[in-house]
Image 1 (cartoon, one colour):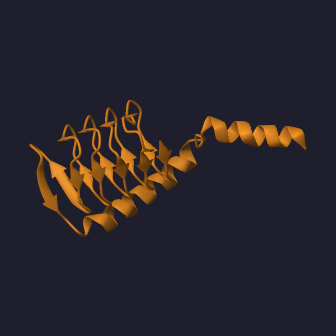
Image 2 (cartoon, rainbow, N blue to C red):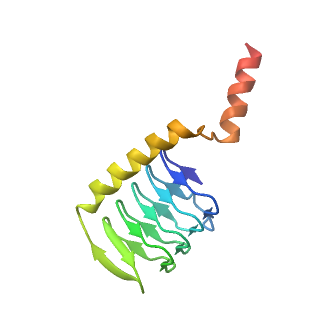
Length: 134
């Protein structure tokens, strides 16, 4: 799984790669509590509501909102700027992309001031081994 910058992953969110290829997650996404993500690819600035389920092989565009408790079926493609809610009803809202980005950028800024950023274990072990060898 390759995770981009400024993503917010809440407690209890599951990100699972069931595909043979890497699951690539873009920048500035929000994964709320209990979200279960098995997608093939996720672009930038999306919001995944609490307890939503994105099934294996789904492709999520940029600036989308998957509302709480919504299920995206396997191999479904969600186009850019789509809001999916209720019984998989879809609403296109092109201006939503800018709002998502501003909201997520502000959340990342606030969270960085409040909490320490978690680094991937392999990144910290490689930096510690290089500093100990010098």
